[in-house]
Image (cartoon, rainbow, N blue to C red):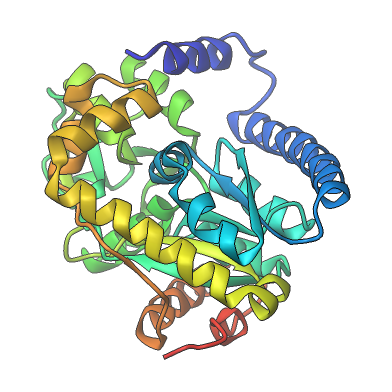
Length: 339
């Protein structure tokens, strides 16, 4: 198991039992957000003092944007336009969205669900780009000797997932598709490191998770894949910005999305090399990233009306389940040049 995952599990298991996992996660996110906002505000001020040109402040999680950063191609293409690029790494999509909300970043990457919660909280986000559907990159896993053989067997069982993430929507639609109610399972809200530890200890019956955590569970825990999201949800990833930034920097964002798609295209044609590069970024064994990439789909493009309609369905579902406090109109987050 990667050292950084082991450290996360060790830290989570040493917390006082009086603190619920959900509470601990909230506190970690608030702390991380405060630190990130303060750091980014300071760096942004210093940068503004040094240059009179435009700045693209990128927030990112470990992954394809990390590879784009390492190659430096975005900086090279934007330099003739007088644009400087800064990079800040985050440990989760919701924290990135909070950083956007406080004006600390201009661009970032996230799954399909966190933007819905952010929009419900009033964040001024705009969808800048989206991946192609990647349903095989999220799935429900159970212990290899589990008696659970179908979705119906999940009724009454302890199902763990990261609250507010893409897999929460997957679970909602999966239960609906199989004639079950959202409340027919025990919802255990755990971030991936804590869920992995609970899975190992037998404290949960099933775990809904995404890659590369999914591939790691299959490779190192002998987790059995019950089913992935194929035929249930699309599981796109999104790139987001703010309304203010896109109104002044549409040209910059188009270049960024194209560069990300170039990385995606390269990875689709060079999976062995991509798995090696990604394993170094993520701190995972290459066999894990190979499993992840071999079931991935590749491609990134600007958001159009059809893709935005998919997000509207997520928002409507969560409102009906009373997971968000108000109905959303996703057109408020539409790109300027929505097609």
